[in-house]
Amino acid sequence: MIKKRYGDIFVIVMSNFSPLPVLKGRGSQINPSNPFESTNRSSILVDNSVDDEASAFQTRVIESKASSIVNKVDSIDVPLGWSMNPYQGCEHGCVYCYARNSHNYWGYSSGLDFESNIVVKINAIELLEKKLKSKSWEASPIMLSGNTDCYQPVERHYGITRKLLQCFLKYKHPVGLITKNKLLLRDLDILKELNKDNLVSVAVSINTLDDNFRQKLEPRTSSIDNRLDLIKQLRDNDIPVTALCAPMIPGLNEHEIIPLVQRLAELKVNGIGHIVLRLNGSIGEIFENWLELHYPERKSKVLNKIKDMHGGQLSDSRFIMRMKGEGRIADIIHKQFKVAKQRYHKQIPFSYNLSLYEKQKNPQLSLF
Image 1 (cartoon, one colour):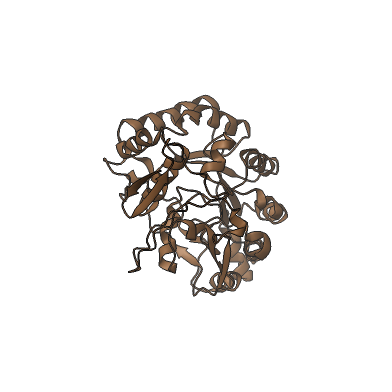
Image 2 (cartoon, helix red, strand yellow; image 1 turned 90 degrees about the vertical axis):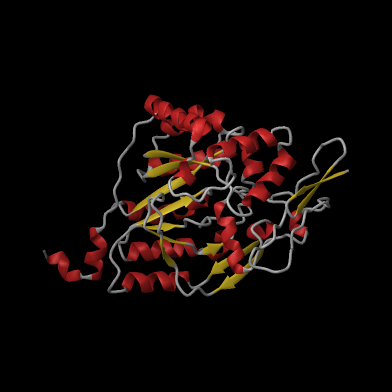
């Protein structure tokens, strides 16, 4: 065996350079240290002979009562004003997820902890209704979720997202959703009612047509076929859909841009957006370890291409640039999307209806 060091993380690889078996159903295989803790809890799993549901990293749900639920989004490069997250942590396990770093504030690591310790905000519905009933609140689209997926597996049991949608419908308030999970179709009945008044839109995140790659990168998300079917069923019901091709990872999935845009255009999505990969905080450690396990022969090339997009670094906190990157590699990605959309896709405009919520709050306005 050969032991390799990445900062505080040790990775053990077989002497013939074949990576160890990965922990089934998990994106991260390590728990990088929480920067807010004095104890170094970094670890690498070397015994993956047991199924993960029987291991120490089976999913653990923590019920919590939040003090607030609707958050102001103060970012010039994120096209939404408000978001709300009924869950913290995400069992989908997407290895690149920027939200991993936020798990540190809850006392957990951004690695395996993020996808195996899920915080459920059990009072989310009450908090949303309180916000919508507030005299100071003015109609503005609220995004579910913006941080972690509101249709991740735990939603099957708690149904918080469905109840939140019912609340939005009750108050005739606009809402957006972003997901990688076909579970959203469970709530198609409510979405259709919201859509009658232009109160809803859905963003489906999809960055590959290769489900084998998806299983490594986003292990517990819906399959690519199921995500494409999700888009189809939403569009068949005239529900606005934006396809978010994110993240684009040079050396791994940028070769799929043309066929991906073509397939999404065939489904008549309203819009297609894309974001390049950035690896802030401890996500860099997690992603490097993931490459070592799944694509060791490509590791150096992929990391160098990512650095090329972000001024020689894996991380990038600069507004605008953190999403689009810069330099030759980023330019090639952007040009491919531009050419593909010019060739295959025609944007279908959509705008939220902001007027009905005011009438709901002030019934006398409906007299005018």
